[in-house]
Amino acid sequence: MDTLERHSLTAPRSSNKPLFGLTVLLVEDSRFSSEAARLMCLKSGARLRRADCMKSALRHLKLYRPTIVIVDVGLPDGSGLDLIRNLHSNVPRIPVILGTSGDDTLFSATIQAGANGFLAKPYCDLAQFQTKILGHLPAPLKTLSPLPAVGTDITPDTAALRDDFQHAIEALEDISNARYTRDFLFSLAHCINDKTLAHLALDGEIEELRRYLLTLLKDLPAL
Image (cartoon, rainbow, N blue to C red; front, side, top):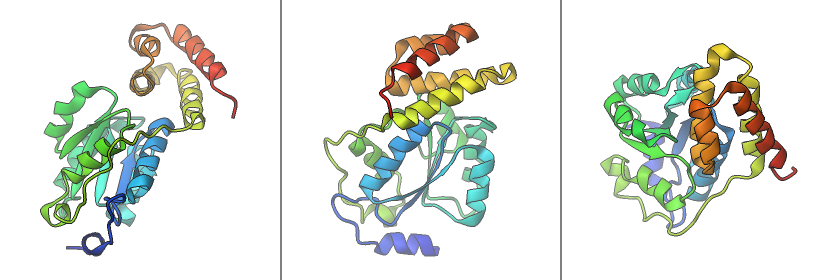
């Protein structure tokens, strides 16, 4: 058992901070989803670190060992499934590895890659977020975990969503990276419940998709 796990076992958790003393590494390119996860961890007592790509995640993992890693399946520099396979094969293994996506059909692929479970986007229900993590903690940690919160919804502010729209508009300029950008937008569309964006991300022309993003950006409340 390493120092982090010993601290996790002895951390003074309370009923409203069930993840106190745990460290979460979120490997996620979306600022909107990252902000939601940050608020979830803040409410739960966990410390969150974020990497926006696989390369950044590997740099983080050379410096410290988190208790939980949440990996987005779609990343700008490769498949999150490859990172999950890498993490699953490492010894000692990180206690909890979760895959995540706005496309819930990827559940089976993340489990086959070695993840303990799958965290569906959007992250909005605090109780579900806590329950998913608590349910996969190893026995020594699980026995000390109090019940998760009930009936608490989390909503990120529009600044993070604005950043995602701007990122996607710029990314659409690179035709060679169009598949990644479409997947990014499809997942984001699921998070914000925008069926038009989901449709355009899957089947729309690039210019039509760009125009729609500009409209969404214009309609966001001013910062």
